[in-house]
Amino acid sequence: MALKLIPKASTHPINVQVIDFKGTTPDHPKPLVTARVKGDSIESVWLEYYIDRSTNEPNPRGIPSMNHTWAKVGRSLWKAPYMFSLDQTKLPPGRVQLRVAAANLWEDRGTSQPFTVDVSTANAQKR
Image 1 (cartoon, rainbow, N blue to C red):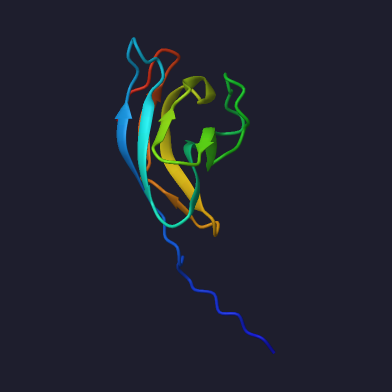
Image 2: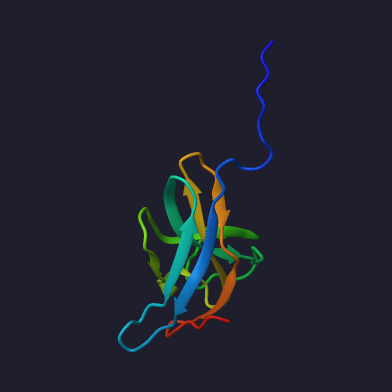
């Protein structure tokens, strides 16, 4: 008989922090999110938004209908610096929660604290 012991906590923790958010300007129409990721063998880092919508609620931008979950938005990054240019047309209009997520070689995941932005076709501001 063989017995495999699996630790409860991750043996390769990932720490993710949002360190800067720059809203839109006339020179840069897309908001910019900068994150710091600490951990061993980071494979990819991406931006996520929280979906909390009723399936009966209209979806004006044709975003897939999912409820109460985090969904990836934009491209993943594989090397630092982790700076994301946020395409607001990929997000639903209104107040949206965002966070930065990361995964390592062992498929451990870490996320930053969520933050809220106001999304419109014109601009977004961190709250």
